[in-house]
Length: 218
Image (cartoon, rainbow, N blue to C red; front, side, top):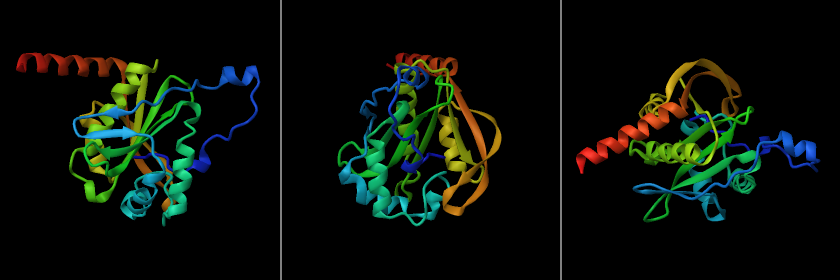
């Protein structure tokens, strides 16, 4: 659940030479994603108020690496503007209800420094916890990433005191890799996190198992 949420940390655009462009990860499309009950789409201006309300919560800010607290409407406006740039192949999504359009939270895929991996992040507003929303969103992101990009693995991190986020990752096939520390902006301190990884081989196995199960059930 350690999604970055500070647009100011995004790389600034600079004039690029041909050498620069060779060093930078390619830009990728961020398609709209559909699940059984969710639509994952780019955040837009109509989401600003809902993002500001849901993210202005210490239960969220202390679990996500770069959400300030308090979190105001201006922070949400800046976040939405920066999300539209999709710099360096990053994708940021608003997680919304498929029928009503209600915003539940946000999620993202951020390109790793090696260009061969992604980092997953997500947060769900507290009123919508324990509904399986995060798991649905993570499955959609993972499937899209492995189907559309030449990546080797996806990493994710969650605080050691966040068992709900740990369960989401484990249910999505991520495997524990180790522990470490990350900075949390809202409390201006470093905290202990667990690091999880889902590699392509494991994802293919999970997809194959899921397809076999459906075939036997039909």
